[in-house]
Amino acid sequence: MIILHNESFINRDEAKTDIEDRGYTFGDGVYEVVRVYNGEIFMLEEHLDRLQYSLGEIAIDYNVAEKKLGDLLSQLILKNDVVDGAIYLQITRAVSPRKHHYPENSVPQLYAYPLDLSTPEKEQKEGIQVTLREDLRWHRCDIKSLNLLYNIMVKQYAHQNGFYEALLYRNEEHVTEGSSSNFFGVKEGRVITHPANNYILNGITRIAVQRFCEELNIPFEEKVLSLKDLNTLDEAFITSTSAEVIPVVKIDEQEINGGQVGSVTKQLLEAFKNKVS
Ligand code: PMP
Image (cartoon, rainbow, N blue to C red; front, side, top):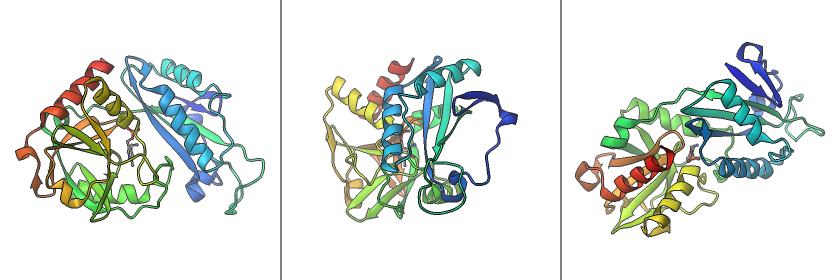
């Protein structure tokens, strides 16, 4: 495997990360996962914009446009013959002795490499069951930070208990998102999802779904759902770069749409497939 380290392409075996990289000591960095369809990155501009936003919010001095990161990623895809798959990329602040405050003159460290990824076809067709967990993350979920400890804790809980995803809520009035996905409800033909604020990550697939809704004349509403609202939904689904669109047919023991995949969800999944095929 060829990987990208800063602006150089090296073999996987040559990649060595310093023990004082702040990604290790503090989780001080940000990341993206981009999807590759037919050798091309899906919604590259949107991913680069979000990456630049995350970098800016934690003041990592790295300019995506100046570094021509899009071109570097295209080269990485070619060098690894990625046709359908994904690229993981992370940027940490610096390699620097362990002091909490940001070091001066820091040199950000970028690594990017292909990820093994397969489309969850069965789940897309049949739907999934999710489990509700309290959202105990910090209040800056809009930053795509390397700090994913709570996300992996709840994902592990879901996994161990036979659920595909954990659906998070801050309190009874406030459902946020999945541990690694955005959550959507459908009610009387309207698609409803959490506003893109500091309580969720503004998913790239979320943006894609918003655009499909516009194209298909499906009303799209940004609104906070309560736990009670979940019981009244006609349909539900999650989205992410790796999952695309997956119907949710059960939230804990509560079936949605009688445990069947709903028609609006089907329409959006179909729109997604058409877009990337
Ligand atoms: N929310 C969280 C917490 C996530 O980790 C992800 C996936 N990275 C998403 C939402 C979905 O984002 P995207 O569609 O950009 O993959």
